[in-house]
Length: 414
Image (cartoon, rainbow, N blue to C red; front, side, top):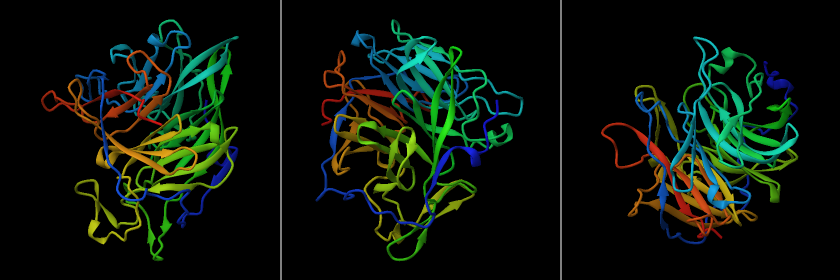
C-alpha cells in the first residue's frame, strides 16, 4: 500500500525559514555547572557493526515495565541493520529480531532506528502493550506485541502498512525516511524524517488483528536563521540534506513535544490529540549555533570555523540527540562532549549536567544516541532505571566497531 503525497497529510504547520526564535527559558544556569559523574551498574553485550556481527549498531532503547512482576520488565532496543534486541534487567539478551528484507533487488532493506512503548492498545478484542519501531530503511513504522508473561515480542505489523513520509519506493531509496520516534499516549506516534527538518504525527490503527497507522499532522522546523547581528546562518549538512531531527519525546502531562534538531537546537512545541497546536520555540541552542562551517567533499565532513564563533550558541555540544523524561526532569544527550544536560520539564530551566563514566563493572557512555528512563522502582534499580546508548563500547575487540547500552539507577533525577 502506498502512502499519500505529503501535500495531503492532514494538518500541517510550517515555520518560516529565516527565524531566530525566542528561548522558552534562560539557556544556561547562573554560573558554571558541576558535571556529576555517574557509573552504570549493568550493560548489554557488545554489538558489532561488521559482517561477522550482523551489521548490528546499537542506537535507541525503550523500557517496558511489567504490570505486576517488576523483575520481568524488559529493555527493548534497536540495532539498525541488526534489528531489535530484548534484554532483561541484568543486560542479558533474551531475543533478537531481524529487520524485514528489501522489497526488490535495488531497494533498501529494513534498518531499525528508534523504538518506544505503546501501553494499553486495544487489538483483536484484548488490551496489549506494543513496541513501536521506526524502520528508516523502508520508511515504515512497525509494531510488536509484548508478551505479558515473557516480555518477548511478536510482530503484528499489517502487511500493507504505508510509507510514513514518501510516495514511491524510488523516493524511499533516497532515505529521507522515518527516523526518530516516540509514543503519544496509546493512540499516536511522533516521528521525525531523516535528512530533513520535518516531523509528523501518526494515528495507530488496529486492522483485523494487525496494526497499521494513518498520518495526522506535519511540522517543518527552520533550516535557516537570522542571527542577532543580522547575518543569515544555516547549519552545515551533507549536500542536498536539511538539518534533521532525531531525538523526540512527548510530555503529555504538559502538552509539549521536544524535538532534537541535531546541529541546531532543542525545541519545544505544543501538541494535543496528535496535532501540533502552536509554534516551536527553542529551549537551548547547540554550542555551534551561528558558527560558519563548510562541507569538505574530500573528508565528507563539515569543517567548523570555531575562531569565527559569534557567540550565539548554548551549552549543548552538537549533536543534540537522545531525549527522555522522568519525574520533573527532561534528560538531553549532548553527543559532542559525551555528557547529558537536564531541564525542569515545566519551566525548561537547566537543572544539571552529568556524564556516565567508567566504573568497576562497566565502561562509560560516549557519543550517546538514544536514552530511556522510568521512575518506577525495579529490581537492582530502586530509584528507577535510566538506559543510555554507548557509541564506543570498550574494551574493543581489535578493530571491530562496537556499541551497547548502559543501565543506571535513576534515583539522582528529581
